[in-house]
Amino acid sequence: MKRITLSILAVCLLAGFGMGGNEKTITNLKAAYKGESTASAKYAAYAEQARKEGLVPIAIMFTATSKSEAIHASNHKGVLERLGQKVDAVKPEFVVKTTKENLEDAAKGESYEINTMYPGFLATAKDEDVTDGAKSIRWALNTEKNHLIFYNKALEALKAGKAGTLTKLYWVCPKCGNTFDVAKPGKECPLCGTASSKYIRFDK
Image (cartoon, rainbow, N blue to C red; front, side, top):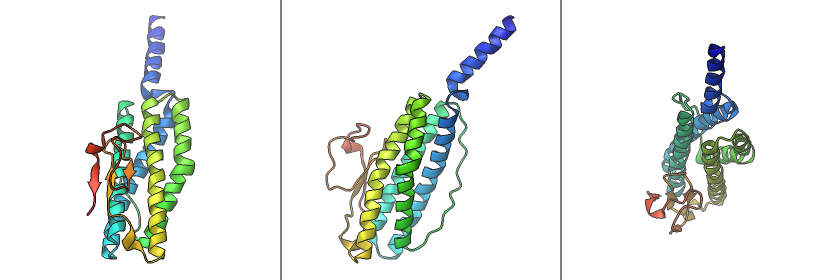
């Protein structure tokens, strides 16, 4: 009887520490980690392509969003590790095309995350009461909304032959990845409260 009781207790403890009750969120975070890691590498490659085409403002933008996605990936990985999960390295797979096509691809990816992937992941994390996971997902979701605006704006400017008029200054919050395209950001990040003095500047 004592052995049975101990076995039941062990199962309950494991359930409370990432082995039960949060399986869907763990699966979702692993998918999000892979997606963000791939996006970071892809946007870095898109930045290089934009430079080859002489589109410096777009190159700077992609460099900034690449860093932002890397921060999202790191945040997701941190949550998974705190849940006792082993996080395998990601081997990004993507194809670099023209900057116009790359912008279209980036906008499509962000739209999917904003409208489908992350809202579903967030709802599941809340249902399973994975607070850290919900926060990491929420930070990524809200940041991707900014990224989509950047990509659509850049695509419109490129089509109009006005890519040179796009901003050449971006800021990325090192904690949540929030991204800004303003000359002077506010005192702190509206998503995580990090002081803007700690933001990473991108202007080259």
